[in-house]
Length: 217
Ligand SMILES: C[S@@+](CC[C@H](N)C(=O)[O-])C[C@H]1O[C@@H](n2cnc3c(N)ncnc32)[C@H](O)[C@@H]1O
Image 1 (cartoon, protein in one colour):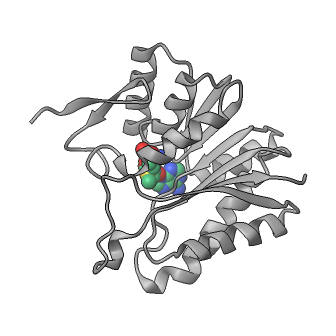
Image 2 (cartoon, rainbow, N blue to C red; image 1 turned 180 degrees about the horizontal axis):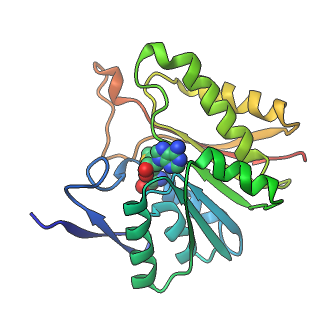
Protein backbone atom coordinates (compact mmCIF):
# COMPACT_ATOMS: atom_id res chain seq x y z
CA UNK A 1 0.00 0.00 0.00
CA UNK A 2 1.42 3.45 -0.82
CA UNK A 3 2.06 5.91 2.04
CA UNK A 4 0.17 8.63 0.21
CA UNK A 5 -2.45 8.83 -2.49
CA UNK A 6 -3.94 11.75 -4.37
CA UNK A 7 -7.61 12.54 -3.91
CA UNK A 8 -9.34 15.01 -6.22
CA UNK A 9 -12.23 17.08 -4.93
CA UNK A 10 -13.56 20.43 -6.10
CA UNK A 11 -10.82 20.64 -8.77
CA UNK A 12 -8.04 20.38 -6.18
CA UNK A 13 -5.66 17.42 -5.96
CA UNK A 14 -4.96 16.67 -2.29
CA UNK A 15 -2.05 14.67 -0.94
CA UNK A 16 -3.60 12.18 1.48
CA UNK A 17 -1.74 9.92 3.96
CA UNK A 18 -3.06 6.35 3.91
CA UNK A 19 -1.58 4.82 7.05
CA UNK A 20 -0.85 7.77 9.32
CA UNK A 21 -3.88 9.86 8.35
CA UNK A 22 -7.09 10.44 10.26
CA UNK A 23 -10.30 8.54 9.53
CA UNK A 24 -9.66 6.72 6.20
CA UNK A 25 -7.12 9.44 5.35
CA UNK A 26 -9.84 11.67 3.96
CA UNK A 27 -13.11 12.96 5.42
CA UNK A 28 -15.38 11.84 2.60
CA UNK A 29 -18.39 12.27 4.89
CA UNK A 30 -18.14 16.05 4.47
CA UNK A 31 -17.80 16.05 0.67
CA UNK A 32 -21.37 17.15 -0.11
CA UNK A 33 -21.22 19.90 2.54
CA UNK A 34 -17.94 21.20 1.13
CA UNK A 35 -19.43 21.30 -2.37
CA UNK A 36 -22.45 23.23 -1.03
CA UNK A 37 -20.25 25.75 0.83
CA UNK A 38 -18.35 26.85 -2.27
CA UNK A 39 -21.14 29.19 -3.38
CA UNK A 40 -20.34 31.48 -0.41
CA UNK A 41 -16.61 31.96 -0.95
CA UNK A 42 -15.85 33.86 -4.17
CA UNK A 43 -13.97 37.06 -3.36
CA UNK A 44 -14.26 36.36 0.38
CA UNK A 45 -11.88 36.01 3.29
CA UNK A 46 -12.24 32.43 4.53
CA UNK A 47 -11.10 30.77 7.77
CA UNK A 48 -10.92 26.95 7.81
CA UNK A 49 -10.62 25.95 11.47
CA UNK A 50 -9.77 22.30 12.24
CA UNK A 51 -8.61 22.14 8.65
CA UNK A 52 -6.78 18.77 8.62
CA UNK A 53 -5.49 18.61 4.98
CA UNK A 54 -7.36 21.75 3.94
CA UNK A 55 -10.33 20.13 2.25
CA UNK A 56 -12.55 23.16 2.90
CA UNK A 57 -9.84 25.82 2.68
CA UNK A 58 -8.11 24.72 -0.52
CA UNK A 59 -11.48 24.10 -2.18
CA UNK A 60 -12.41 27.68 -1.25
CA UNK A 61 -9.13 29.00 -2.68
CA UNK A 62 -9.81 27.16 -5.95
CA UNK A 63 -13.36 28.56 -6.03
CA UNK A 64 -12.05 32.13 -5.93
CA UNK A 65 -11.76 33.06 -2.25
CA UNK A 66 -9.73 36.24 -1.86
CA UNK A 67 -7.79 34.90 1.10
CA UNK A 68 -7.77 31.60 3.00
CA UNK A 69 -6.37 30.82 6.45
CA UNK A 70 -6.24 27.26 7.80
CA UNK A 71 -5.82 26.27 11.46
CA UNK A 72 -5.10 22.82 12.88
CA UNK A 73 -3.18 21.37 15.80
CA UNK A 74 -1.49 18.71 13.64
CA UNK A 75 1.86 19.68 12.13
CA UNK A 76 1.93 16.72 9.69
CA UNK A 77 -1.56 17.63 8.45
CA UNK A 78 -0.53 21.25 7.85
CA UNK A 79 2.66 20.16 6.05
CA UNK A 80 0.59 18.06 3.66
CA UNK A 81 -1.91 20.91 3.29
CA UNK A 82 0.90 23.26 2.28
CA UNK A 83 2.31 20.68 -0.14
CA UNK A 84 -1.10 20.32 -1.78
CA UNK A 85 -1.50 24.11 -1.96
CA UNK A 86 1.89 24.46 -3.66
CA UNK A 87 1.21 21.61 -6.09
CA UNK A 88 -2.11 23.18 -7.08
CA UNK A 89 -0.75 26.75 -7.25
CA UNK A 90 -3.10 27.93 -4.49
CA UNK A 91 -2.23 30.54 -1.86
CA UNK A 92 -3.23 29.84 1.75
CA UNK A 93 -1.76 30.63 5.14
CA UNK A 94 -1.56 27.99 7.86
CA UNK A 95 -1.45 28.33 11.62
CA UNK A 96 -0.68 25.47 13.94
CA UNK A 97 -2.26 25.55 17.37
CA UNK A 98 -5.30 24.90 19.49
CA UNK A 99 -8.13 26.38 17.45
CA UNK A 100 -9.76 27.81 20.58
CA UNK A 101 -6.60 29.80 21.31
CA UNK A 102 -5.99 30.78 17.69
CA UNK A 103 -9.57 32.01 17.17
CA UNK A 104 -9.37 34.03 20.41
CA UNK A 105 -6.03 35.51 19.30
CA UNK A 106 -7.47 36.44 15.88
CA UNK A 107 -10.43 38.11 17.62
CA UNK A 108 -8.07 40.06 19.91
CA UNK A 109 -6.05 41.14 16.86
CA UNK A 110 -9.26 42.54 15.31
CA UNK A 111 -9.22 40.07 12.41
CA UNK A 112 -12.49 39.46 10.56
CA UNK A 113 -13.46 36.78 8.04
CA UNK A 114 -16.46 36.65 5.72
CA UNK A 115 -16.78 32.88 6.01
CA UNK A 116 -15.69 30.68 8.93
CA UNK A 117 -15.80 26.87 8.95
CA UNK A 118 -15.49 25.03 12.26
CA UNK A 119 -15.18 21.27 11.80
CA UNK A 120 -13.81 20.00 15.13
CA UNK A 121 -13.18 16.43 16.26
CA UNK A 122 -16.00 14.84 18.28
CA UNK A 123 -16.05 16.64 21.63
CA UNK A 124 -18.56 14.10 22.97
CA UNK A 125 -17.32 10.54 22.66
CA UNK A 126 -19.32 9.07 25.55
CA UNK A 127 -22.60 10.04 27.19
CA UNK A 128 -20.85 11.35 30.25
CA UNK A 129 -18.98 13.91 28.08
CA UNK A 130 -22.26 15.59 27.09
CA UNK A 131 -22.24 18.63 29.47
CA UNK A 132 -18.55 19.39 28.88
CA UNK A 133 -18.88 18.78 25.16
CA UNK A 134 -21.93 21.03 24.80
CA UNK A 135 -20.01 23.80 26.56
CA UNK A 136 -17.13 23.32 24.11
CA UNK A 137 -19.46 23.59 21.10
CA UNK A 138 -21.00 26.77 22.57
CA UNK A 139 -17.59 28.32 23.20
CA UNK A 140 -16.28 27.44 19.75
CA UNK A 141 -19.34 28.87 18.02
CA UNK A 142 -19.04 32.06 20.06
CA UNK A 143 -15.41 32.48 19.03
CA UNK A 144 -16.29 31.90 15.38
CA UNK A 145 -19.19 34.39 15.48
CA UNK A 146 -16.92 37.05 16.95
CA UNK A 147 -14.78 36.85 13.81
CA UNK A 148 -17.73 37.38 11.47
CA UNK A 149 -19.29 40.65 10.34
CA UNK A 150 -22.96 41.16 9.60
CA UNK A 151 -24.00 38.79 6.78
CA UNK A 152 -20.96 36.64 7.52
CA UNK A 153 -21.33 32.90 6.98
CA UNK A 154 -20.58 30.31 9.65
CA UNK A 155 -20.43 26.61 8.77
CA UNK A 156 -20.73 24.89 12.12
CA UNK A 157 -20.09 21.15 12.16
CA UNK A 158 -20.25 18.39 14.73
CA UNK A 159 -19.42 14.73 14.27
CA UNK A 160 -20.48 13.78 17.81
CA UNK A 161 -23.19 11.12 17.58
CA UNK A 162 -24.26 12.05 21.14
CA UNK A 163 -24.98 15.66 20.11
CA UNK A 164 -28.31 15.70 18.29
CA UNK A 165 -28.90 18.24 15.54
CA UNK A 166 -31.26 20.18 17.82
CA UNK A 167 -28.56 20.33 20.49
CA UNK A 168 -26.12 21.85 18.01
CA UNK A 169 -28.79 24.34 16.98
CA UNK A 170 -29.24 25.10 20.70
CA UNK A 171 -25.50 25.62 21.14
CA UNK A 172 -25.48 28.01 18.17
CA UNK A 173 -28.47 29.90 19.53
CA UNK A 174 -26.89 30.26 22.96
CA UNK A 175 -23.57 31.29 21.43
CA UNK A 176 -25.31 33.99 19.39
CA UNK A 177 -27.17 35.28 22.41
CA UNK A 178 -23.97 35.36 24.45
CA UNK A 179 -22.11 37.50 21.91
CA UNK A 180 -25.09 39.64 20.87
CA UNK A 181 -25.65 38.16 17.40
CA UNK A 182 -28.78 36.96 15.67
CA UNK A 183 -28.25 33.86 13.60
CA UNK A 184 -30.24 32.36 10.75
CA UNK A 185 -29.66 28.75 9.72
CA UNK A 186 -29.74 28.73 5.95
CA UNK A 187 -28.62 25.16 5.16
CA UNK A 188 -28.69 21.90 7.08
CA UNK A 189 -26.22 19.24 5.94
CA UNK A 190 -25.33 15.73 7.02
CA UNK A 191 -23.25 12.90 5.67
CA UNK A 192 -22.53 12.53 1.99
CA UNK A 193 -24.52 9.72 0.29
CA UNK A 194 -21.55 7.36 0.60
CA UNK A 195 -22.08 7.42 4.39
CA UNK A 196 -25.62 6.02 4.61
CA UNK A 197 -27.50 5.90 7.90
CA UNK A 198 -28.48 2.40 9.03
CA UNK A 199 -31.93 2.69 10.62
CA UNK A 200 -31.03 0.10 13.26
CA UNK A 201 -27.64 1.58 14.15
CA UNK A 202 -28.08 5.08 15.61
CA UNK A 203 -24.30 5.67 15.72
CA UNK A 204 -24.26 5.80 11.91
CA UNK A 205 -26.09 9.13 12.16
CA UNK A 206 -23.45 11.45 13.53
CA UNK A 207 -22.53 14.34 11.20
CA UNK A 208 -24.14 17.77 11.28
CA UNK A 209 -23.07 20.75 9.15
CA UNK A 210 -25.19 23.85 9.71
CA UNK A 211 -24.65 26.87 7.50
CA UNK A 212 -25.57 30.02 9.40
CA UNK A 213 -25.85 33.67 8.45
CA UNK A 214 -25.01 36.27 11.06
CA UNK A 215 -27.72 38.89 10.68
CA UNK A 216 -26.93 41.40 13.41
CA UNK A 217 -23.66 42.85 14.61
C1 LIG B 1 -12.97 16.32 11.95
S1 LIG B 1 -11.28 16.61 11.61
C2 LIG B 1 -11.35 17.91 10.44
C3 LIG B 1 -11.65 17.44 9.03
C4 LIG B 1 -11.41 18.47 7.97
N1 LIG B 1 -12.10 19.70 8.25
C5 LIG B 1 -11.83 17.91 6.63
O1 LIG B 1 -12.93 18.25 6.13
O2 LIG B 1 -11.05 17.13 6.06
C6 LIG B 1 -10.71 17.45 13.04
C7 LIG B 1 -9.33 18.10 12.93
O3 LIG B 1 -9.13 18.86 14.11
C8 LIG B 1 -7.77 18.79 14.49
N2 LIG B 1 -7.77 19.15 15.93
C9 LIG B 1 -8.12 18.39 16.99
N3 LIG B 1 -8.13 19.13 18.11
C10 LIG B 1 -7.76 20.39 17.73
C11 LIG B 1 -7.60 21.63 18.42
N4 LIG B 1 -7.85 21.72 19.74
N5 LIG B 1 -7.25 22.72 17.72
C12 LIG B 1 -7.02 22.64 16.38
N6 LIG B 1 -7.16 21.51 15.69
C13 LIG B 1 -7.54 20.40 16.34
C14 LIG B 1 -7.32 17.40 14.12
O4 LIG B 1 -5.93 17.38 13.88
C15 LIG B 1 -8.14 17.16 12.83
O5 LIG B 1 -7.36 17.53 11.73
